Image 1 (cartoon, rainbow over the protein chains, first blue to last red):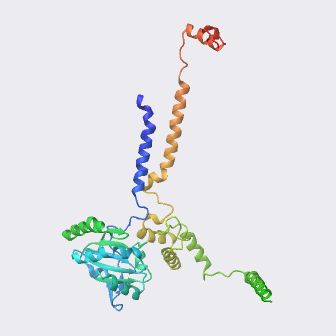
Image 2 (cartoon, rainbow over the protein chains, first blue to last red):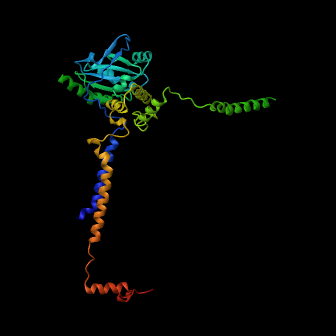
Image 3 (cartoon, rainbow over the protein chains, first blue to last red):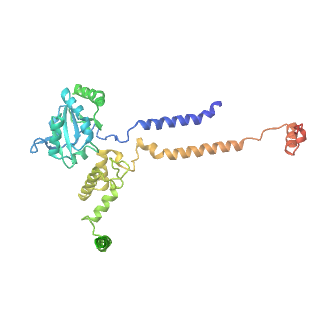
Length: 177
Length: 167
């Protein structure tokens, strides 16, 4: 009973631990309910050939990344070298979803920054973006061979994210399929 | 003359600033939307939805492009005859419960809903327990000798003590 005075201290430390953990969380990253669900279907015009369409069924059997980007998006420019590197590694196919962008501006952007995408589809009014729960660019979805979303990265992909998160997951999914 | 002309022009300008809006304001404001009833439903629902870009604004208030898109989605779906609950389900399926200002009651949110009440009940319960225990405590037992000494002290029996030497 002597240690009774320690109870408030213990309560305080427990509260401080919870609040401290809260500080390490990023409130702008909202977990997606789409993880482990089939990727929403779309059929959209291609950026390079607007008269042709492309859909997720064209990626069946492959592990691929769906990267939501736009030429007006500053952080997309920041992550772009990482995407080029990922594409060059040959470990994963990249599909771009050009979100609420203008065709001319998007093409100019790719010409100056390099094009890591196997295919780019355009979503000028952001409707497919809503289906994917996109609320900010860039966002990247990792989709497996069965067309199921396995992971979502919100914000620019850094070198660390590519190496420590994406590549191991890609390797694991590629082995499984 | 030049100065006078300038003053005159400025005066006219001020009059125009005051009069023109007055003249326009005289008419009833005409509704901007085709279907005010639908718009009221859109607004009512949009106030319950959180804008994911600004997070502390509702979809109704936010001017973020995504909020505009979501308002359009809500309007379109309500106009197509969907119920409010169906539109909410549509958004929750894409953005998660985070899009709702009023989180649903489920196993992961039980603590969120009942935590404060639990703390209140626990706190009041603990306080009552302590008070009751203290009230139940018997007065300390004193021997006859101790009682006499206490009485002496209380009744100004300072004489019982040797007086402090005064300076």
